[in-house]
Amino acid sequence: MYSCTQCEKHYSFQRDMSVHMNIHSGRYKCRECGNCCNSSSALAVHRRSHSGEKPFECTVCSKRFTTSGDLVNHSRIHSGQKPYKCHLCDKAFSKSGHLNTHMRVHNGEKPYTCSLCDKSFSQSSNLQRHKRLVHSNSRPYDCPYCGKLFKIHMFVFTLMQSRTHVDTVHMVLEDMINSKYIC
Image 1 (cartoon, rainbow, N blue to C red):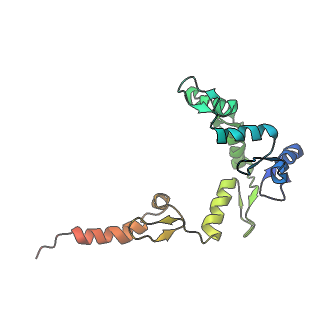
Image 2 (spheres, one colour; image 1 turned 45 degrees about the vertical axis):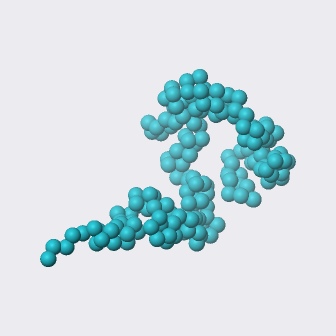
Image 3 (cartoon, one colour; image 1 turned 180 degrees about the vertical axis):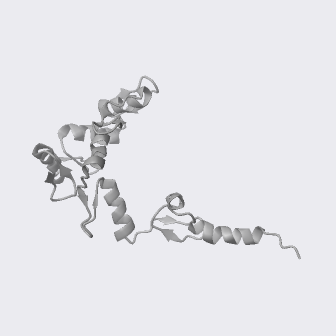
């Protein structure tokens, strides 16, 4: 396993790591926004995000894409094709990256480690969520009724908890206001 010393990315092959390092070197840097890419072809594709050019069109739904690979991946939505099959279970995937991530369920690999507490994760997104929820004081989501701030969105909070802030604080008040007292 090859690990980038400047970010938390990991690679199985040295050549992939070398290509990744182009991002940090600024070798293929967009003049318009400063975004760094890992190759000249990736930079050319990135430039399409500024121009809005999407030369590849789906023949089924007419949706357009910046790369032919994105069109191929998209076409699997229409065909239902899942060519990437797990050899250990019955799961199949439309993208190779999804299979690679899934394989960590079987091999227990957790290549993304928190630099603050050493907890490890199988996916980069899970590490980022962990850092935001456990180690950050950022509270970007606010209650629409009173403005109280939260680390997670109210919808997610509802799924995780049987009772939410809105249920316990605001709905109780609403029930009291709307109840009819009979003397």
